[in-house]
Image 1 (cartoon, one colour):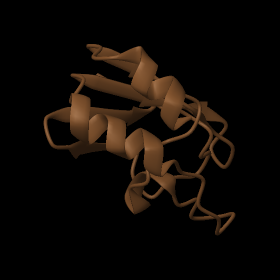
Image 2 (cartoon, helix red, strand yellow):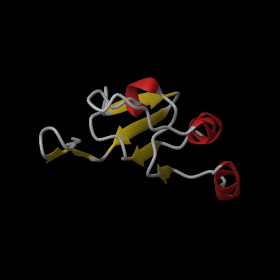
Image 3 (cartoon, one colour):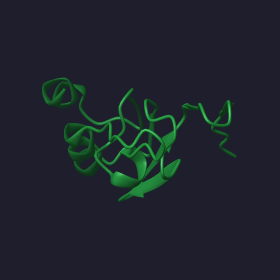
Image 4 (cartoon, one colour):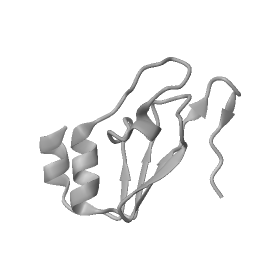
Length: 88
């Protein structure tokens, strides 16, 4: 993952399956597991895209969070409510 992100260079919008290694975004409050990537967090901190969209965590502690200037958003589907995350 780290090599792929390094080859990507700077972007305005980053889309990944896995969230960055930020506990509020990566911890599944029902499943009790974290799904996260330290490499994605490092990329976001270094390249500072305007937005980072991701999914994979279906019951996150938070649906959005700022990492520096980057607005990180979970655009996944919540299994518990059977509703997609709404952003407005």
